[in-house]
Length: 271
Image (tube, rainbow, N blue to C red; front, top):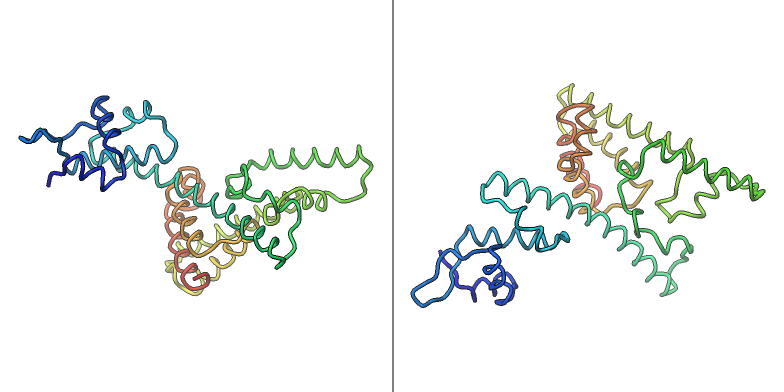
């Protein structure tokens, strides 16, 4: 079915002048020009326009978009999967920002107290997933810096108390010992899930859901997920190349297995 430029503008929200500009630059050529001299678009052009809008949504400049677009279904799928990953990452970041807004609104209403450091939770890189935040060596080096700072200032507080006073709630920098303990916990969870796969257990089995429950509690050490954000996190585990590489090191099916278990856990315990 063919759609006129006016139809496409109404469906997509893209102005007529923008569509005309896309045609002039070759970014989006029409399917044909009708006998009424109007411009018409068909399904391939509508899909290309969607790709353009996705590219703009993730912050690409217009002159960068053209080389990114491909007409083959395989290339389109690859590009759209990348868009999906970027949007999931944005969703996780926005979730942290929403939590900060909710806490601030609650404080202004006199409903709860708010520590000063909580005002900035979710900004910058604070909303990133703990497994992607930093390497162990970076974390240890950062803690060494704070330890040296404490010594120079003659402070008697331990490293933990300093870190907790300088990081947002749920995002506080852990001591070296706590950080390594956290990594050991998640490694044990991954190994137990690997064993469950090898034993032929299903993601919804009570044994696996108990392990997923430990995963959820581990996540809560960093931020409090809703059902939606926990599901999105599960999808991110499957689709993000860094996560996939990490999970494949345990078992080639672990990313999907963990995601499926998280979907069930989100439905049962977070909805």
